[in-house]
Amino acid sequence: MESREDIMQNAPFETVPMNPVIGAEIHGLDLSKPLGERTVAGIKQALLDHQVIFFRGQELDPDSHMRLAGIFGELEPPHPIFPKIESHPQIAVLENDENRPPETNIWHTDVTWRDKPPLGSVLYGAEIPVSGGDTMWASMTALYEALSPSMQKMLEGLRAVHSIAVFANSGNYETSQDAEKMMDVLKLYPPQSHPVIRTHPETGKKALFVNSTFTTHIEGLPLDESAAILKFLYEKVKTPEFQVRFKWEKGSVAIWDNRATQHYAVADYYPQYRRMHRITINGDVPY
Ligand SMILES: [Fe+2]
Image 1 (spheres, rainbow, N blue to C red):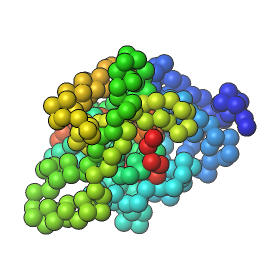
Image 2: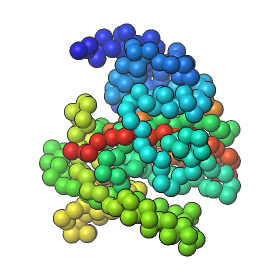
Image 3: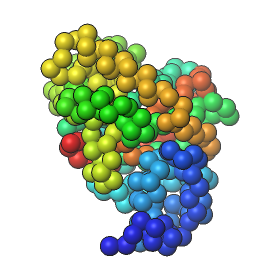
């Protein structure tokens, strides 16, 4: 098998780390064209190395977007809540403006309410406001590694419950018809239990796997203990040294490893219009 160094040396693009912990920009690729074997191997390795990678000045139509996401594996089924591109329902359209205020300005890992949360996502900036709207990512491996050995040990034995029910409390679900739809969604996607610390299936690194959006509680603990531990961990996610912040331009692409990161979409561009296209890649059962 080719070594990590060989893969990156043979990759026909430049990888520029944004800091030593998380995030890299990749230069010299046109993602609208079919990608060769070395390019694919290099992009996958860069994602494992940097946890979130960025491209600028791309023109991704639905087909090239699907092809790019497909290099990482099978794609997730259409999102049960988000609007989608009709001809390509696996592409979620995240659209915000005056009447649809941004709501993802809270730290989270995507879709942890599924039994197999996604490997990652490929997000394309289709319409970007003139200012504001950065996205931040935080490394959950860096967070885990910064904890004391005693805290690591305590957390490793624990599991936490994740639920999609949070969408029921969002402003978008006010009508009774929406509430009914939410009940159906909950039947389809009942709450899931995942380890608080997961092991990355490819790098073998350990990472924190609870998030302030979907995690409801840690199993087997009194509620006050669960709440105190989660609060402590969610504060840690906000540590700037674990983070990278990306300024979007029209045509920017971000690909993140959802098994090792959390993200936060800064909502300061409201009430300007923004449209993003997201494809999510299937993951496996966390362990
Ligand atoms: Fe997200």
